[in-house]
Length: 586
Image 1 (tube, one colour):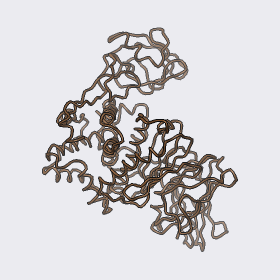
Image 2 (cartoon, one colour):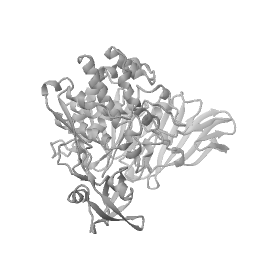
Image 3 (cartoon, helix red, strand yellow):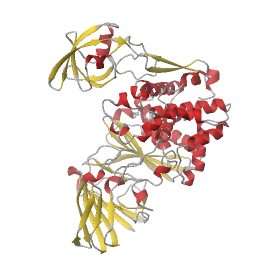
Image 4 (tube, helix red, strand yellow):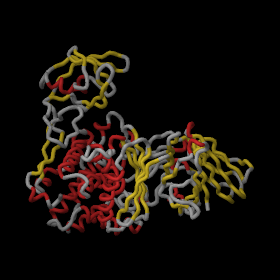
């Protein structure tokens, strides 16, 4: 058995210390650290955070040769090979590791070297508490199985069947709030780290509904015997990463409902959708996955054109299942779907990149977005979700409502996920062809097209009208029928000390033609200082107005002429016009 010992030796310096006990080994034994973590498709080079990697045969120092950025090789036979190193942990995200005097968190991909050639051997992980009385109340939260002499939430030993399982159980440590609920006979725990005023009873009640709805969708039996939602609560934040029996989340403090709140806020709605999304991944990507990921190659990029299916379909179900579980009402769901559509229609990149291309290039484009992303790429999350909606409605109509997207997911689980078989590029199309009784290549042709999906006529057959209007302001997300502006700047902005700072600029829009660029601080229009009401101020001038603008680019003052154009109808709104048709979908 390979043994890992990890201790937060200096929370103030953000340092974990790791000791790896390998036992007998031969000259040439190699060790390596992953470059990326499943579910987050970018090479992150976790090895950059390793410090002072050294090797010993028992207590005698031996030579350890570094082969490249993430691999090391032992230079002699060893009776008792031991490796020691430190890990700098200061990434406040769900993808890496973070440690200070308030808490500790890590993913195994960030801290545990792999013993190459021995990945299938059983593993024991010894978790030690940080030194000092200040940390005497710290506990541990992880879905990894406690060793027989240990118990859940305690420091001590935990076991895994192999290295792959070891790195798929993140660990949270500190003083946290713990709440529990049962879903389909399986214990689910909720851990909240950070200061909060959350109503954990309400959160657990809602999560129970969502989890049971998802378990039922996939046959009624969960693929694990314990599940953990570990959540870092911060002032403002959002993120999640799925694992085989847990999920790591980050949310804003105000997103969680207080005991005094009974209504459904936008923030809480978003949090529930995030939980729904990561939980759905228990099936769709953790177990149903592309053949390219069976097994994962974590040393380098693993290219696939299928991320539209694994993130897009999941992104369709995440909001939809909060409605199906009874956590949000129909109006809220249609608003959420309208906002999703708006995020797609406001990006010019959808005309330049297909869903297959978006999936394939996630490593260099989606996960490395810059200020020009909206002009260059399309998200396989958002447009992928719209394609999932398109498939769902099409399957329902073509089969007279005998089948829907649920049946596709159930077939994927039965034939692939539960069998440990990866999907090929044509698997989803072939299964849909079986469901509708004809070749579905025309439906799946949209994956290689940059045209907008024909959703309006499909939704109309379910009694829902899709309309589009211009934005009502800089903060308008779409989804609701708000008064529209007649003009547009062609840029998103935030407040700045002297005016507003442009976050991104729409290609061929008024701001672009005036010479403005992302990062510029616009300070005056027509010799009047601007503020965050800029969009409404511009609206007073009307279409065709030519306005003198002043802005700073770095420390240089620049001028130009802003010619206002008619606002584009990019905000999507869904309205029920025939309830009798809606039951075929909602």
